[in-house]
Length: 405
Image (cartoon, rainbow, N blue to C red; front, side, top):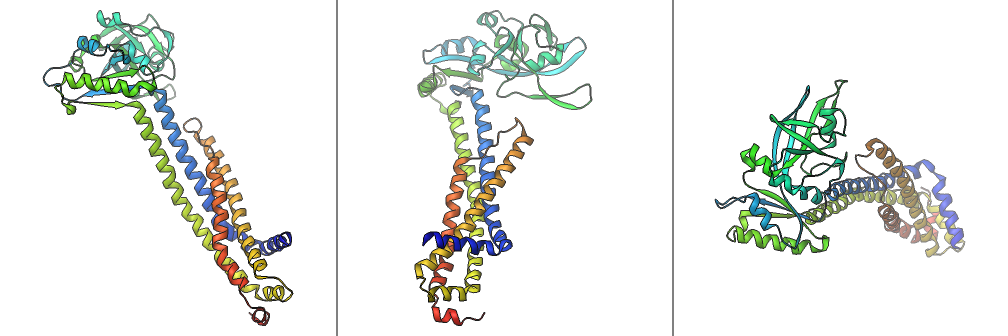
């Protein structure tokens, strides 16, 4: 009985292919929009989270806004940060300098820091070494440069031992960072290449903090520094300890400084991404509801057109449940067929978008959303097919047979 009802429903759906397709179109667009928008939101969120995680997730960033007329100096900072709760610590100062070598001159973003900074930020070396504690003690004129900076000034990356002039002072290059290593606050500099087209490169150099303090007044006191914990599980302990130290240092004034937990930043970004996915998914789901209304509209028209057919089926013994089941199956078939086509269209669209975006952002179909759209489409078919099916099932055989519309 069920098989026969299913065949009749399928034949009715296929009887008017163009009308069925137009009815499906609302579901197709709704499902495709839902999957594409949520997948793009997930891709964007994953891309941002990946970039943040590359900078490390177990470190604290501290900013001093009020030094209470008692600035934090490098020697004192080294003592304050020498606690067992901290794995590494490093001050950070920034300045812009003019870099020169041979006939090449360009603006370079200079960071005054220590060797612990590279460990905290998980920055790897291409060649040479990182900054050492002795570099800070001796105010050494040494510099670790980014990969692009080495290529920009010397035309190659293996430049350990070469000299680079920064604001007229000669620095020895002791290390070159790997190609994908850069500061979280890196500044992009635009240069012209031989084809006169524009490309963006990172021009960065890292020098001992003590050396920077001799080059600029901005580094005479420490206003920003980073501290890492032993592991991700001890982040809260490290944050509590750092807050105790700074409160004691600045007279229990919580407004004198701020501490930012990198793991909290990652969690906040994930929450934002989830919220965006839900919001975009909700907006796209509205079009699915519109598609459901289209299904109900067409099914009501179909019930009216097939009044005599309903009367004949009832006259030869078809029950109310059988009639209702047939029209419900028709509505579900249209809805689910539209869902399948919508999933296929979204898969193709996401593949094209992935090829266009390349490595800038990874876009892949969200399998959970695809399954959810199937369930939602089936539900829409039932809900919006229920009224037309009930209307068809309640027709009286004698009235249906007399209908001449």
